[in-house]
Amino acid sequence: MTSLTADHLRSGFSPVDQLRAENAALKEQLERCQALATVGTMTAMILHEFNNILTPVINYAHLAADGDQQMVAKCVRKTTEGGQRAVDICDALLSMLRNRTGEPVRVRLAELVERSLLAMGRSPAKDGITVHIAIPGGLSAMARPAELMQVLVNLLINARSAILAAGLRGRISITASRTDEAVTISVADNGTGIAPEHMHRVFEPFFTTKTGGAAGETGTGLGLALCRQVLHRMHGDIAVESTLGQGATFHITLPA
Ligand SMILES: Nc1ncnc2c1ncn2[C@@H]1O[C@H](COP(=O)(O)OP(=O)(O)O)[C@@H](O)[C@H]1O
Ligand SMILES: [Mg+2]
Image 1 (tube, rainbow, N blue to C red):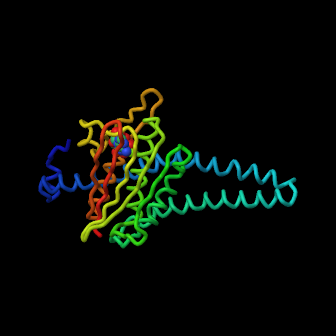
Image 2 (image 1 turned 120 degrees about the vertical axis):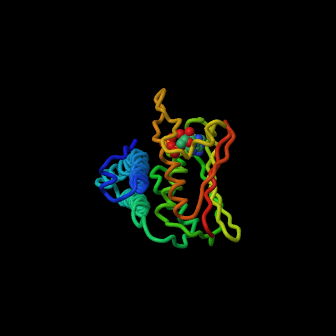
Image 3 (image 1 turned 45 degrees about the vertical axis):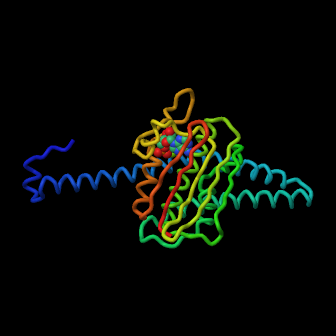
């Protein structure tokens, strides 16, 4: 809580101006925390994936050292594939961290969704999750690509957690469509779903049901708050619908 002191009065700003400035500074700090929290969640998944990529790369390199020509050819192909996937993940992540300012530009959605899946680090298939994408090839929207990727990665990571918590064969569908003024991107999963009493709270900063009990996941409650904030800044929005026990669908809208 801020107290109004003689300092405020001496500074020449009115107490209301002071509070506005403090509010703006706190919002900026919160946003930085949110961005770091996303990176934090992703780091573990990405390290795990790099381990999965590099272990076979090393094994194939050892095999190539004393294999026949056919074996060497196979090893070179396998190590090249592994190396390429590692580079693709790095590129996707870097493009998410770069270009975080500036005016929204026209973004091709099918490509951005593909890059967001890569930036997740871990392929959903490894967790038995099928990803179904239905986005018209030429469909685009006005957005800041790095920030939109961050929103999508957050939604995908949440979908993955909800599916793993439900312990079902998972499915994530990503669809997009447009009207005259707006484009809607929807990310739907068949995970745990959201309890009716939590529906209006999920976009609140620090609201999380991931409390780490029984070796469960620990959340920060910052992912969806970040999604909403960055979408508002791009003149977009986000909404959710869900049936508990059946899954959740998040709808992103952006200017067409
Ligand atoms: N796809 C989803 N399915 C079910 N619940 C979800 C989903 N996405 C978000 N939630 C709920 O919203 C809460 C807030 O999400 P988020 O802001 O990303 O924070 P965190 O993931 O750190 O908990 C989650 O703890 C969870 O209860
Ligand atoms: Mg989250």
